[in-house]
Image (cartoon, rainbow, N blue to C red; front, side, top):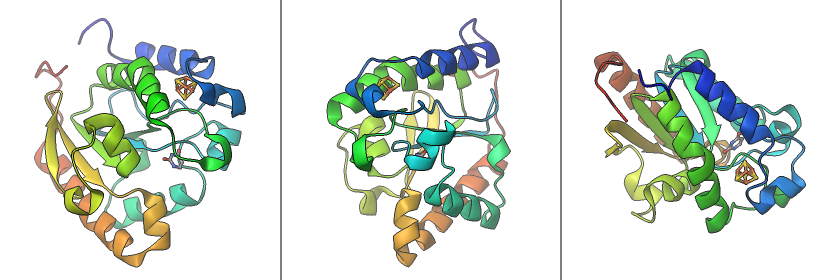
Length: 199
Ligand code: URA
Ligand code: SF4
């Protein structure tokens, strides 16, 4: 374990995120939402941006998208307690508009990259096309890429839809169910190996 990893570091990041003013999204927030989960999660989930409920409670995925995500976790035998859940930007965009490219770049460079280093998750799950663009860039469309596994900073990365799509479209819910079942398989066949020196 490096000096920069571990619980102290992820907690310190959360306290700094709460005060961040690095992009214009701080102007409209009630609370920043750093994310939550164990300091050594089995996987790290990255969504899009906090919504109304998240902004009020300072917790990730506690609104309608969170409820569908919790239902999918249950169907796929995943527990929220084993996962670190966050979003691409930590502050709610005005009227839930999509985060802009510069906001995504600033929040990733300032916080998301540091969170990935501190948590050192064996697996990253991208939820939706905004997280996909934020983390991997414009590599393709969600309908072609969901369910695919990539290598990202010496760890596995899996792509799926955003739960808000599952909320609206039964086909997206079915696709997410398959992708999360794959995540469950990967977690059971690849127990995390903290001595592997991942970055
Ligand atoms: N959507 C996200 O991407 N993140 C949240 O925390 C809530 C909804
Ligand atoms: Fe800072 Fe990210 Fe919030 Fe922008 S969205 S103010 S970079 S925490």
